[in-house]
Image: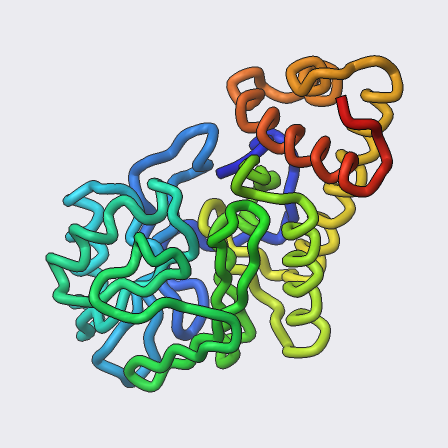
Length: 279
């Protein structure tokens, strides 16, 4: 879910629906909104010569979309072998149960409440289905259960809502925490520096072809927003709604509720680090 869709994001975007890398195909869910950008990206991943595919984030509970995902896989001569979730927000996970029924697959996620018929996911796990290798990267912050999936064969990372293809994501207070989110962004930056990741396959918006640039943009944006919030408090804007009206004045008002969640997370972070006083 985006915090502010009007913000620019990285400009080197690409595919919205269709092939994105040698192993990744996007099927765009029809749930476009100010919060979901063009809609949820449901990713079908498979080795080029494999008959088995992995689906990440089936998306909303929309039978037509779920059957379309299956149809795209079948048109490529594949069947779905496993379903994975980046996190539990409904625009990513609500359709997982129905998708599992339609495909006969198990669902793996960090949150036990989202798992169906299989074990969970944790740091260091490697998912191998049909010869495909996906490395699990814990990235809490947007939510406590957020995960990314590193696809080393394509130099790509599937980021869910941790990094979007356009704009910036919200830290969904109180479940999301800004300190965790900043650590997660640094973890993703290390993938771009040390592990050859160059492409972001996001949960919303277009593919980003400069992964390191995207991470640096997010870190810089968070530092800028945090400084703005700290200054606003020092200037007497003491409630989260007052801070939103002051700091996010240039953002569409329909996004202010999401912005307020991020502001609450930022205020918590500033208090925890002794940068502002507790009320």
